[in-house]
Image 1: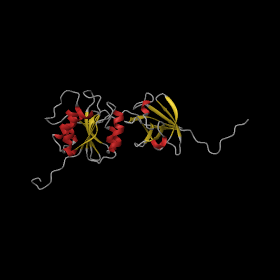
Image 2: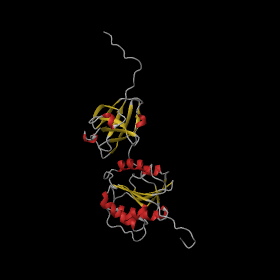
Image 3: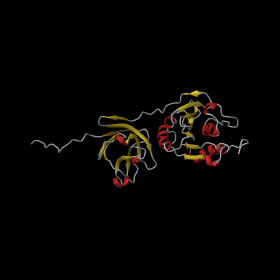
Image 4: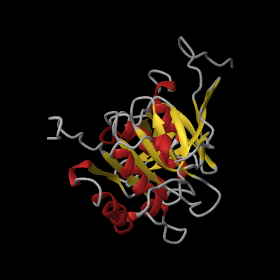
Length: 280
């Protein structure tokens, strides 16, 4: 208890999501553990695809939809570390804070958490020295996150700025289909796109899929089991978007396809009534 009889404020939760792997992430956690209790630090993932800003933003947005407001979220997918991109902290509308590189990876998360004000991190307190130019996760982002978790306002970390947007076009509908891109290749080799499942016409049993330089007509199934082993097919993913998969196999092994590969789904209008008979 404090002298005034009030219980000290508990530090905010800090989450970590990186492409660094566990060894580099452990160095970030060491910085945080010097300032925060262990139960205030949560590892979301350290297995994001290296350097892939757009895929990380897609995956993390889905994770963040289920996180409670008010935490400090550190994201490190930072191919431009040491270059012109700035380190930033964003104070979000729902009370959350985001810390990471200003390369667009934080933009969808900021929107999800109610928007907010961004600040360039230039004023990390003494004792948080930067060693070299290649590990801002440990030398800049972790110390800044610890300070935010302990109650320091984001505005004290540096000057206001406009954060960079994510430079990835969204999906769009067409009269006979939709265009988008592969947003995520998961560990099973499933190709998760950014085209909403809700755009697929009701009752469609097959669709044309243009992907990786080839077009195929693929069946639509509700589950991997329904498709049967080895079948390449389309289904609605857990992200709420269309997915190209191979039941008990890897769709990513068939063709030169990766996150960012354009995709087109085509559905032809169904004709009502019986088919017309050809004249002899």
